[in-house]
Image (tube, rainbow, N blue to C red; front, side, top):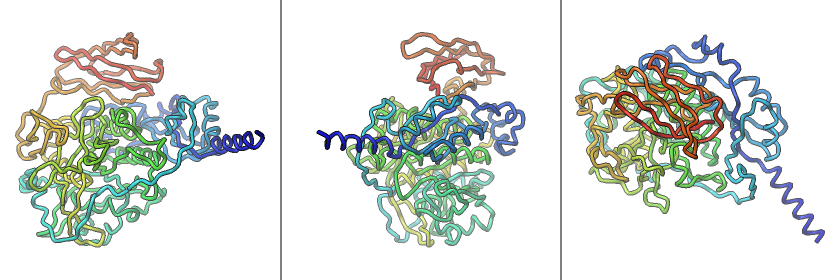
Length: 533
């Protein structure tokens, strides 16, 4: 009995001291008034211009996390700060269960969310670490190829012929690494025209982004690569920021936090389009992994961040995933995010590629949104060899480049209008499927489609998730709208009439959780979910 007791003590001590990942959410931002009065202290002029063009107001989510709070958490016993998010007013930390829980004693800590969901219910368990396949592309064959099919399938070449090649638009690529981009000839045209604007390695916290895994290099080549008669990217004249957010050595939720932090930097730099050929479902530690029920657009940290990115006026283009032929065929995070453009894959004959992850999202939304060629897509490797590769990792950026070129052609459209026009142009728009969503877009015909009125569109409630102040973007024809919030018992907890010129309301007095909302305007009624952090 003494031996058993001793072993139990050792096991309890091991569990208590094991390193866990968690998000620490703060109650407020004490510097908010200063930053909102001095926006250039937190955002570039280009970022402010993008918001102004789309009638997007600044709010507290734009304000940096309090440095005082960061310092206090950093100095706490046994805590390592891995990443931060101003949008979600949170830090990603690593430490023992006990040391992380001790942070709750800090007066400015609102709540703590462990990546291990068992710990959030205080049911700690020890689980063996498993290996996860990090390769998002399914195969690479370096044979001669011609990229005309993957562009002509989308009628993207017709935009190029009109000089809509992404010029004036900025794309941020969030990926695993970009070795060879600074030396391989297919990227030389970007350097000759000063189109690589910079980047950052969030994993290793340094400015050497021409390193890491080669996946980002292959992805970038489908948008910005150029070798005459061999490879022409879908946005050869766009400008690019290159951000490393994927750690090729492990699979851990901190990569979601790196991604959100990079998206926030992209926002502050004035980026228009974010491309990410990354997806998260299974982690090395199974306690961190998601289930299909989590693919609801509001659970995963990265998906919540992606939706906030949309609320800032950017378009996030996300690969659906390559699990279509597996026992878990559904999309991963952030492909489940409500306002991202999720891209599946077809082959050169425009038929569904069986590896492409399927929809719908768990809450029943159409996913993927659209598809493009992802089977035997033409790419460049790190040495400049032109070949083919398969995966939604490539159909995604092929679409992202076309989004930039298309938005160049319609510069006065909002991000929501651009996304809707792309969906409307797709060949399955009237009859979407779980494999291909709305289908293959026709970017040429999308130029002539009637711009959707916002009365027929979802009115935009942002940020969502929210901490304090929530804004509502209303159609130009609507003077005011009534917002009603209900708790999970169906009880009304908030009611307000919001004028179009100041459509904001506070949720600071509400408890953290999920609320149902109803927005009633003169010509539309909309319902949905609002998350309060």
